Amino acid sequence: MKIAFPFEENNICEHFGHCPGFEVYEIKDGKILGKEYLENPGHKPGVLPNFLADNGVTTIIVGGMGAGALNIFKERNVEVIMGAEGNIKENLEKYLSGNLISKESVCHKHEHKHDCGNH
Image (cartoon, rainbow, N blue to C red; front, side):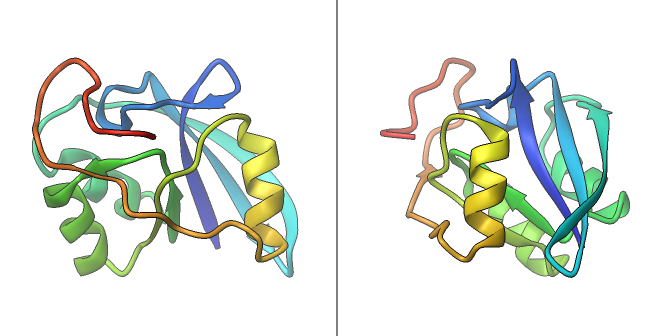
């Protein structure tokens, strides 16, 4: 299993599409086997969900994202956990222990400043 986080200074970046890159953790039997960094290839419709799925990501943990990205992740069988914020390692630990619950946090407007509600 590979879990990705939009990354910005050890925290989950608020805007999924505008993050500098993604921290991707490889997990087996609940243990972290490794971590890699994937640079954001660009914020264009459909690029990021396919890029991450093509790199083996099976779960993405984010603050929020647009409906288009969410739908592509679903089509690619990538689990999406929304409403996360703060430190990546803390969120990863919560997820692995079964204590990170997805919240409704879909961005309904596609703007370049963050304006997607509370996430």
